[in-house]
Image (cartoon, rainbow, N blue to C red; front, side, top):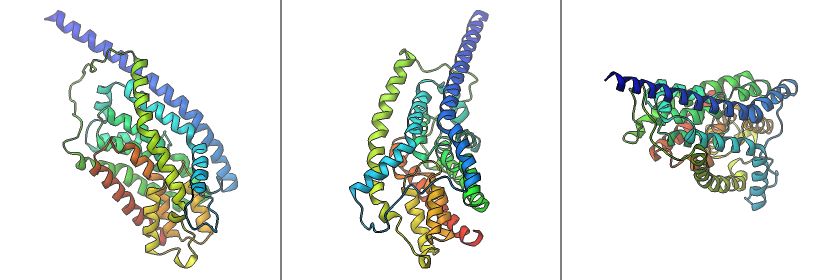
Length: 356
């Protein structure tokens, strides 16, 4: 009996050491990638924002005379967009597949597998260093759901990346104003933590198992680590790339209808707030691109209300990112998130009418 107990302890100790090693390797890879793709470039961009009160021109770049969608507009936008995000997109796919093949399942379930607010909060807090746009964070959300973490935790990680991005908040403060930053922070917290937690209610019957055991062995998979990773990479590429490319091209073509030139007379009405809340939720942008877009629109006469709506809805989610994660979350959950982003965008816009 003692011999069996000793064997069990030795096995648990071996599993614990292996898990620590795997988690450490993942953290090193993630930190190295984020330093190169996000943290260091954003340091330079923060200095630019502080000195010049600008981080560049609007990515939309629509011609004033354009009134109909075109293939050229779709291509031009896709080229500019992918030039901006390709490094982060590759990093997101790499980390998303490493979540599936490298991180211990039982450890992830123990941390992020519950439907409690605590697990949701951990997912949201873990998203803050990522600073990714919704599309680049989508592969990570897919990877987390593949490991059976809870809907709320995976959503908080996915949504928190773009909405709680600390670099974007810094840029916003110096380019727009601290009032914009405060609005984004308040509504971003509500969306990331509150809406994600409530989304668990729409996932009954599809939820992951909550674990209480102190130590469980991993499900047996005899394949080498590199083979499991290549399998995850192939499945991820097939799953996300086609929908991603097509949706970006479609939105690039339709941008002239989604973001029409609005004069000052119609630039701060409730109808405009609602319209831009919906369009902002659908459209796809790189990280922090909402700042020069809002700066350009307000200079052209757009009111504070619609600008505040775009402040939240543009980065939070997008049609491409929704298509990428559509098989990872129950459809009711995604519809709930879509409706919540729009409603919070409208609320943020109405609030912006009074305080901006």
